[in-house]
Amino acid sequence: MPNPLQLTREEARILGVLIEKQATVPDTYPLSLNALTAGCNQKTGRDPIMDLSEGAVLASLDALRGHDLVIESSGSRVARYSHNLGRVLQLPTPAVALIAMLMLRGAQTAAELRSHCERLYRFADVSSVEAFLEELADRGEGPITRMLPRMPGTRENRWVHLLCGEPDIPATTTGSGVASTPLAEEVASLRAEVAALRAEVAELRQLIV
Image (cartoon, rainbow, N blue to C red; front, side):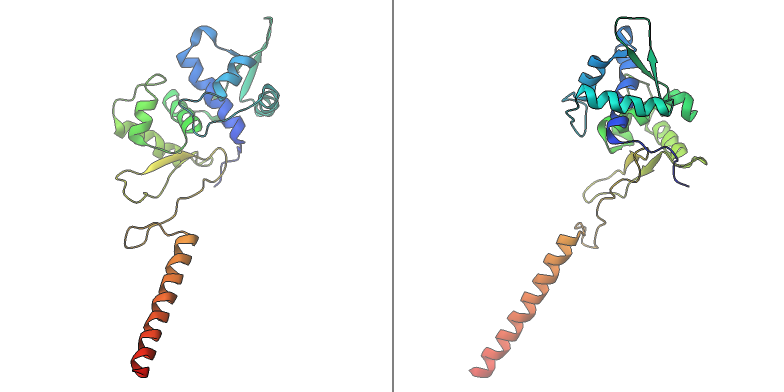
């Protein structure tokens, strides 16, 4: 069952920043538009790196408010924004922290997530991270996370969130451990043809001699 909530990459980045800053800079949370935009465009701790304008952030905030995922605070000189992800999706704090890191940093292993979540939530061990990820992947309302196939040369699987739809699944591996992509398959086919032509040329040379 697919997750009914489908976000854009910009909306996911905004939610991730709001969740992160709530834990790391509580004195300035909820965030102003300027602070939120700066957090979205950070050059560290972000994958991919974005360059969003305040107008683009405002447009995404409007869409998020339509899902009740963002709350705008009034009563100050500037509007301030906070997230409502945990309440809307009925998720505990550890799960919200994991989703935030996946939104901010892309696909990661359970060990990487444990390290990156340190300032948001301290997991006792990698097994506890994996337990929450698996629970999010098996949600009856629709999965929120998914474990990706293991990449060549790696020992651990990476995880992604599904709030922006299905991820781009990495190429599978062949028996030799080499990634199988359309380009790789085309190259292999061309090499086979060249080898066959060389064999034919060799046979013709023997006939001529």
